[in-house]
Structure formats: structure tokens, C-alpha cells
Amino acid sequence: MRYIEVKGLSKTFTVRKRKEKGQLFREKTKVRALDSVSFSVEQGELVGYIGPNGAGKSTTVKILSGILTPDSGEVFVGGRIPWKERREHAAHIGVVFGQRSQLWWDVPILDSYVLLRDIYCLREDAWKKRLDELTERLELGNLLRTPLRLLSLGQRMRAELCGSLLHCPELLFLDEPTIGLDAVSKLALRDFLHEENQKNRTTILLTTHDMEDVAALCSRVMVLGHGNLLYDGALPELLSKYDRVRMIRIRYEDHAELGGLPERCAVSREGQDYLIRYEPSKVPTAWLLSELQKAGSIRELTAQQQNIDHMIAAMYREMDL
Amino acid sequence: MKIKAYASVFRMRWKMEIQYRGAMIGGVICQVFFGLILVSLYHALYDGKPQSIPMESVSTYVWLQQAFFRMLLSSDSELAGKIRTGDIAYDLSRPLNLYGYYYVRILALKLMGSIMRAVPMLLFAACLPKGWGVMLPVSGGALCCAITALLVGLCCVCALENITMGITMRTLDPKGIQSILNLLMMTLSGNLLPLTLFPDSWQKVITMLPYAQLLDAPIRLYTGVYAITFAPRVLLVQVMWAFLLGGMGVLLWRRNQHRLIIQGG
Image 1 (cartoon, rainbow over the protein chains, first blue to last red):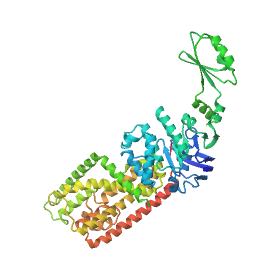
Image 2: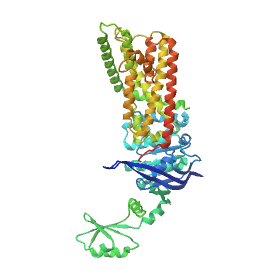
Image 3: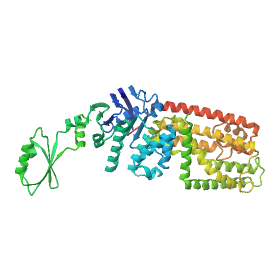
Image 4: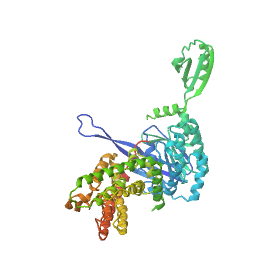
């Protein structure tokens, strides 16, 4: 069943700039945040939504959650037009904006959850059951009576997530949920999201710059740039196009004579190590290895795949973003 | 209508007030100080001179004004902050009428904040000698009318403040509009100088304005300046303002919602 259906979605913002000296009027420029974007998402899918800063990701999320009204285009989420039936729509979705807070700053987080219970008109027993489940899975048990302002960033993000899921939304928007989190919190959050998606069939749209998140969670990615949808499909296929470069880190016993190598691949030094980046399709690995061996006596050698961020950066460069 | 959700906002505000007891005690001390200064001022002013209004009525006016001072000023910087930073995005993703939600938040802040401050202050003022403290209401009926008028007046002020919020959504900075509102409020509500001391011809106009509805009208009912038979007229003016200002606010917010832009992130 199609849960989100977007056709020809466009949104333009007007950006005003301060006058320069001698200029009579403020300069106004139109920025096309979204330029006729179309896609659809099935119920229960976990989709990564990526793109450089200012690509229009958050704008899409805000339109889909009914906060913004688009200029043109058709949007149906669970059969509703979000900005026309905002209140009805809001009861069925959950939102986490990684850089904002929905819980009350001064009071224990439990109080905020009680308020949310009443706002979403949840039945006491259903709310209690869900809260118990979420506090256990998000390890919030002994934080419930602590005011939000005393929590660490990682704890706060878990608390925010709990707040967004109390009413068992059919659809969850996550806007950079792992921003600023340490490795342990990040991994725990990923596990939780995966479980939530599997267990409750919650459709999740994840907006992030953290490619590790996407790689770990999403079966499908959409790449947005300059307001256009540039790619929609599986992540490995997307990466295979840009996963051309391999890297060798090598350390010699003493002086090494690399000879003709720098002409055919990129060589740089990092302390005592040489870093050699090459494309196996252009430079045969066997040849490279024999050259490296000729250059001196090798103490250590490691071969690495390129980091996923480099691949994405290469992709953005190639797509001219 | 989601009465339960709105009631929950009140409870939340109550919890927040309790959270910051120090601020409350500080507020009470400050207001008591101002009350004493003002009452002394009127004593010095009227010393030995004939006066149109009895002294205990003036001091009662001053103390009631000070006790409910928190209802006057636009004080919820959190809501304006939400509009400035875009955190309002979260409130927009709730199944609630946004105008109603903000209205109730403002109402709860004013009501809960004032009750906690007014009770100790009025107890203190009641212990002061005649002409310095607060006197008892002229009758039980007058007290009931005054309380009703205070609540309806509060609705007027909340509606007024929600209009400020609506304007803030456009200007993104609440300071200008809030300082205008606060200036008008301080002067025309009788906080700076009891409205009963204004020239009679001025009073006719000022008492009809929304600013006079919050504290001036209820205090006049309390002290008996307005007879009980006059109460229906007072309430009518108040209800009219509450609906008029509320309607204007709802229209403004409705228009805002469709041109709203949440920037960044």
C-alpha cells in the first residue's frame, strides 16, 4: 500500500538581502527549494533522504508533515493532504527535528509526556503501556523524573524520540536525529529505529548527513539536490557508481624510491606513511604492488576501501551540487 | 474541543511555577515593595488635603493592582522565542488548534503565576492598618462580580497578547510591539496611576478600552465604586472586547498559518 504519494511538488522561498550602499531597494531573490519533486513511499518502508545542505530536504519534511504549504503539486500522506487537514494529519504522524526540542525545558520529561498524552487524546492504559515499552527500549527509566534541562544531548535525543512515538504514529519523520551524538548513542538509536520499523511497521523517513546511519538502516535512499530528486533506489547501487577509488597505506623500513608511481596515481605522505589512491579500473593492482615492492623494503601495508563520505562527496561533485 | 489537553496545559504551568519558587518569592517581595512605595506616595500627596476618593479605597486599588501585576505584562518570552527560532514547527505538528493552544498557554501563565503571588501579597496587605492595606470587599455580591470580571478581563488581555504573537509571526521580533502594548497597558490599566484619579471626562473613554477591563473594572466592583447594579454593563463591555479581540486574533493567525515559513534545519 502506498503511504506517501508526491507528484510535482514545488516550493519557492523569497530571500531578501540587505541593501548595498547607494542601492535604493532591498534585493529579493527567489530560491527554488523544491522543483517538481515526485516520489512515493510504501507503508513500512525505511527511506533515507539525503542531499547537501540547502537541498530542500527539510522543506519536504515540513510539507509532508503539514507545517508548510507548497506552491504547487499533489501530496497525499495516508490519504490526507497534509496542509489542508493539518490537525487530523498530525494525529497520525510523529516528527523529530534533531535541532529543536518539543519537550518542556523546565519540568521533568514525564510531565511533558503527560501533556502529550492529553494532546493526542490517548487512553491512560494504552499510553502507560507504550510509555513503559519506550522507556525500556530507550533506557529512559531513571530519567523520567529529571527535568529536560539536566539531560545530556544523547539522553535528550532519546527523550525526544520517545515523545514523538507515544501516540504510535504510522509515519515518523526524523530530521537529523543523530546530530551531535557519540558512537554508543548513535548505535543504540539505530538499533531502536530498526526495531521500531520492523515491529510496528512504522514508515520512517530519515533525513541525515550521516551516511553511516543511512547505510545501516535504509533499504532505499533518495538523493535531493537543488530541489530535484537525483536518485531513488538502493544505496549499494548508488555507491557502486562512485566507489571507484581504493587506497593503500604503506610504510617502508627506511628510504623508498617510488619512481614512476606518482604519475599514475595520487601519492601523499602522512608522517612516515605513504597514501596511494588509485582506480583499479585504470591502474592494475598487480602492477601497483610490484612497483611498491621494487621501491624499498616494506614494513607495513594496509588496503582500504574509500570512506562512504568520500563517495558521497564525489557523487555531489559529479552531480554538480 | 480538547478540554483535556487544555486542562493539561494549566497543570503543566502550575508545575513550572512550583519549579521556580525562588523567582516567585522574589516577585512577591518586589511587588510588595512597589505597593508600599505607592501607598506612601498617595499618603504624602493627600496629607491634610481634602480628597475626592477615600484613602483606603486608593490603597486597596494599589494592592490589588500589585497582586495581579503579573497578569498585565506580556511575559511569555518562550512563545515569542519559539516563533523566532522556528520551534513552533513542533506545535504545528500537533493535532491542536494553534491559536487555542497558545491562548491557553498565555492564560495559564498569567493565572497560575498570579494566584501564587496574589495570595501571600493580599494576606500581607490585609494585615496593614486602615488606609495602608487592602480593605474587604463592600459585599459578598461585589466580590463575586469582581472575580467574574477579573476572569473575563483576563480573557481580553490574553486575546490582546495573542494578537501580539500573531504580529510577531510576521515581524519575527516581539520587542517593538510588546513594548507598545506594555506602555499602553501600564498607563491605561491604572497601574501607573489609578484610573479613578483620572479626570472624569477621560475616565469615560479609558474605562471602555480593553486595557481597563483586566484590573480596573474588577477593582471598582470590589471597592464599590461601581455599584452591583452596574456589574452587568461592565461584564457586557468585557465580553464584547473578549470576542472582538479573540476574533481578530483568530483571523490573523489563520492568515499567518498559510504564509508561515520555518527557516533552517
